[in-house]
Image (cartoon, rainbow, N blue to C red; front, side, top):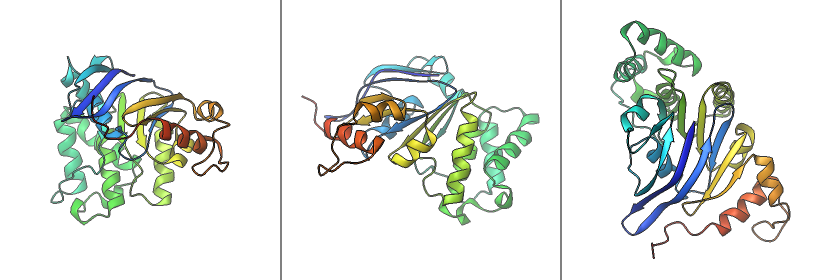
Length: 255
């Protein structure tokens, strides 16, 4: 479970995340949808405790990100955008190291690594150097890292970026399976991704939450909104264009 309560984050005089509040629960993939620069990555870093909020807080897996950041980290799987991976390590070596860092017992490391390799179809490259892999395979290694230890909350920043169509299909299916018993929170700027994968959405623009609900609910609220040039556009796209246009400009200075 994730409950964000008025999260704010400033960079100098720029408020990148502005009073962001929402909930995300197990049983459904929750999408964090917004245009580039809307504050999605910053919000995920706040939830993962890699940034401290200027105001507000969030409870992740039962622990407050401000008061108990280490407890939060023990209970999340976090995939940052463009995850930094050591190119000099082999895939299996890296995952074993990460499993040990996460505190998985010696007897459970081999099993945890094997399950992650299988889920992400990485068995054919487990002995290859990460630096020799394609961007798509490196993305899958980062996602395998996030799954180690079977965390109850997954925070995934653009998890299907750099993947080919078949890999995207597999990851979408995996996210659906994982969400049955976990909180899966996925950021994306792609409408098609949100519609196909997510049963619940949090839409942000200009660092603010501008809508929450299922894709169908959000689309129905904006059924009469025009497209970008006044033309009619379908469903969620119409709603997204209207919400993004009215959500404030990214990078607005604080008053």
